[in-house]
Image (tube, one colour):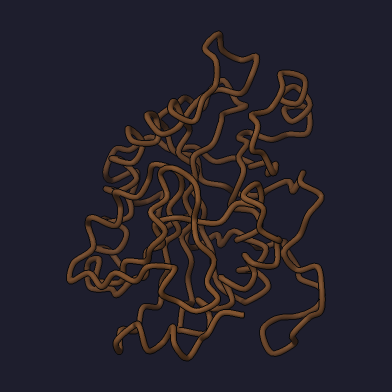
Length: 266
């Protein structure tokens, strides 16, 4: 179990109300935070640690615009061997230290020929293709309900605000459905064809467990994918994590601008 009392103590009387979870290669957003307080995941008793390249495994707490935020440089994937409930525990711990809004980013593969590598896609809905769920197990009614309505898992108002900011910055964005798979292998061409038939626009190995957990905890959430590649069979180039990080770096520039401007306007 995550030690909430110790977590609060490590925050040194900081009171962030919005958390940002950064995906593979997207850690640069944290560099924009002013008066940063850095807390390593390993310093929090019971908190899991990141094991994937591109994930630093730390929190940066500070100000963006006029707002105090908590930025997570590194997330937890099921393919690392974590039980799905670990992600629920992490999101629950954020709620217990005062987080009310969650901004989630990820690196994803495009299944839609109109959504190109380096561009940003707002997630409007998802398909959980993993067969796993972070809410399986004994429920704590003090944190959330046994059965969670996912109709409004992706907050419309937060997304509208981000889209408005993107328009002002002339950053091209898309909207679409994200399909979640466990990984860690990239998908086969046949799987990509199937996912497109199901109506998915992008595919990735994260985010959905966090969104489910946030809905459970009553945290408003917006999620954005930086597109790093086309799905298997949609391009000649072979897929690799190095390619993911390289394209994520390009998209991170616009994502950083977008998140900074969002907090400037709030």
